[in-house]
Structure formats: structure tokens, C-alpha cells
Image (cartoon, rainbow, N blue to C red; front, side, top):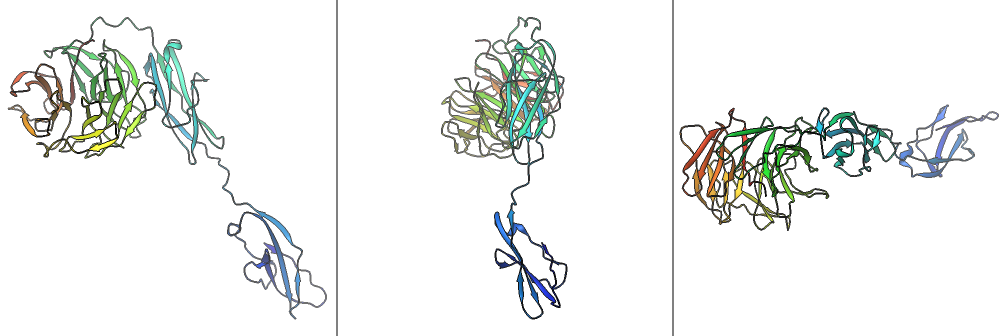
Length: 447
């Protein structure tokens, strides 16, 4: 702020005192040009009056005409656009039936909404809440190449269009194979992303071809005989993979299902109504409840080393038993959203729990690294299962339903069938390369 002083006659100006609303503003300036810095952020927003008082050598004062100013220090306009990326499907993917198109978006102030576009036309309504997704019924689109984009906007009207993702729609594939999952068939998942389909005796029938990227961790059948496989994150930002893939009863992929995954879904269980519960190994470690047509529900559960790595639902429809790569079998009640005490009475042998299955008698069968352990309904360890002559690290287990179960030795990729009561080995086969088989499931057969 500056002031100019006109000298009349022989008067000498000794100083100029600036005033704000009648109060001194800083110190008197004793030399021309007369000025003072004013930090307007120290004044309230709105109208203020500035004056300058000049003082001469004999003490006479001369006050300037007032100047009215308005202080406005509100936030600067938001000119930074949001960022947005399509996370699923990936570019180059082949899609069919109905899939979820998913995007990630962020902004320094806040994302107001994401509008998905198919070949430059709006695909559904704008999604105003994260996670940003829209269902796409690809049967309403012609077969062939199509382009997906996502348009993110913030409250200030700044807009960003994602990099385009090109996918191939294919809904006129050949008729599905006549073979379907039969009762007792084995399904083995491999970290490299493949799923083996084997007969009850372990004979290889086929290798399922997925359309969703990411290595496979857990697999599970629903009541209708469809197979679901979890897909882990492909990249560090979890923009690719990080979902669940569905295969129909013929073993044909129907693409990804569900949304709201945080990172690395590990395993799946279903309730009687067909709701899917998904354990997540990393990030939040939450268990997700995924129901068709409704937003996902997340349950924050106590973790040990790897979130809610493996899950199974008890017959009460409320209690989820889960493991977290620690020494315990943990429990959470999804009906009351309550963390329950650990099921096991003492830390389990091996100390690293993996796949588990709630037994009909209320006990639990769980792989614990060095052995497979069986707990009774009270949580007491009553039996362990293992083999001799090879290094052992047990991961996947599943019941056959006739008093036997299959278990995977991760170190050797050997799959064994045990008698639940006696522990006797009844059958075995090798599934392929070592240290890749991570889960085994027994098909209930078509309903």
C-alpha cells in the first residue's frame, strides 16, 4: 500500500502512518516513497477503509481521503482436472454376456462423477460414488472391436477422458461343450492363472481358458454348479486383475463378477441365498459380501498376516470361519458384524493356516503348512494328516462328501485323497510343475 504527499510551502513531512479501519497499520514510514506491506489474510473478508496520516515537523497531521477496498481471500479456482483409468476389462480382452466396466479416478479436491462411454456414446448413467463401475450387457452390442472410455469430472467442471480400452465382443461363439462338471470332478487352480479340470480319479479332462487376467488363488462352486475363481492383482496399482471370474457348468468363462474389491481376493464361499462372500488377502483384508444388483458390503475383520485369506461359511449362515496365514482359525459373524473369538483352543501345528472347510459335525478341516489339521466342534485338535517321503507344505483342501477329502502338497504339486477318519492315503496324482498348485475343489455336479 502506498501514499503520495504534496508539500505546501516550507512544511516538511516527517512521516506517514497508514491506518486500517481507523487503527494503525504497521509502523509510521519516515521516508518517501511512503508505503507499507499489508497481509490481507489477517483481515476479515469484506469491506474495509484505508487512510494515510501525514505528520510535519511541528506535529501537525493531515489525513487523506478514505479509500474503500474489499478483501477476498477465498480459495483459488480449481483448475486441476481429475485423473481416470479404466481398470477392467483390460485392453485386448475378449468379452461376452454381461460384464462390469470398472474405472479408478482421483482428484485433488474430489471426483464428482465418472461417465462411461462405449464407442463415444454414454454407457449407462454417470456413477457418482466410488468404486466407479457400470454393468455392460455386451449382447446388446455387435460382435467385433469396440472402444471403452471413462470421463471423470470434478465439482469445478474440470474433465478428463481416460485412455481408450479396445475390447472384442464375442457372443456368437460355438455351442458349449456337451460335457459338464460332474459330481466328484476335481478343479485345481494354479498361480499362473490356469484351472485344471480332472475326473474323480485325477485324470485330466481339460484346462479351462479364462478371459480375466491375474493369477488364480481360490476356486469355489455355487449351488448351480458354476465355478468361480479369484484373480489377484497383475500390477502394483491393482488396476488389472483384482476380481473374480465365473465359469459356467461347461467350464466356459463368463467374465468377471462383483465389484468393490480392495486387493487380491483370495477365496470364496456362498450362503443359501446365493450371496457370495470373498476373502481378501491384502490391503484392507476385508471380507466382501457380493449380492447381484446391490452394492458390495465390506466387513472389517481381525487379521494376522494376510487379511482374510481363506473363508468358509458355517451352517448357521452367519459365522464365517477364515484364516490369515497365522496359527489360528478366526471367526466373524456377518449377521451381527461381530468379531468372534478364535475357533481353535491352541495355536495350530505348522503355524500357517491356509484353506479350510467347516465339517458337517461343526468341526474344521484346515491346512496348516506342515500338516492338514482337523478340529472338533469345540476347537480342539483331534487329528493331523500328512505323507512321508517328500517335503510338505499343505495348502488347498476340500471334502468329497463320502468321508474322504483331497489335499494339495504345494512343495511337490502332489494331490492326495485321505480318509477323514483314519488318515489313510487312498489315492494320489501329480498335478504338474511344483510350487504352483494352490487350491483344490471337488465339484458337487450339476443340480
